[in-house]
Length: 149
Image 1: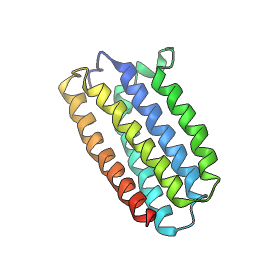
Image 2: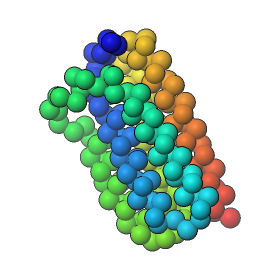
Image 3: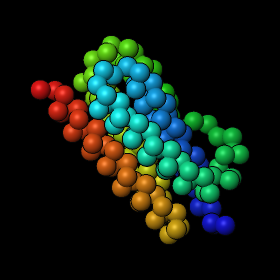
């Protein structure tokens, strides 16, 4: 079994953000008009689900801790409420803009975990996940700019 990192709460934070992103995209699929955008949202869901699965071995202790929500979780929840309202607008460009912000939040929470100098095996997994999440961000950014025209 993998040795759990000393800062297991960071694992829980990352998983919470990823699960929040999954929920955003699930909700967004029903709100966007283009099938290509729906397919992209499904890819984003799949990437985040794979990341959650990869992080589960590092969560054994983190999932049992009762900690207060860090400030970013409160901000994330606020973004979620704003995003739900935006998705109801049926304006694909606005929805993509909000989802790009979700992708940026995912990257920030992973970067925060990497800044704590985690054990090598955990850091390797985080870097692998971050690379995939950066690709999701870049894809969302590109699609957002393509719909702005």
